[in-house]
Length: 75
Image 1 (tube, rainbow, N blue to C red):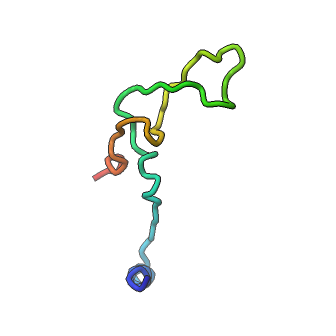
Image 2 (spheres, one colour; image 1 turned 180 degrees about the horizontal axis):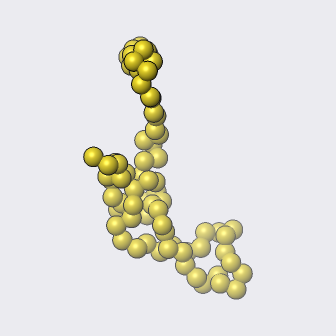
């Protein structure tokens, strides 16, 4: 806990911006490298279209390989 206070104190004294991120859910921010389809989740079925599937636009836990989330940042 002490080292984060040093970093925050240094950032404050130099008038720097500080940002944070939650890396526990970083897998959700990766782009899919292939098309993945799933059945409509229970409770979200469209009446008359129960046999339709959904194409994922972002990753779900266990949905397959994604590009690393940090590849979205410019270098």
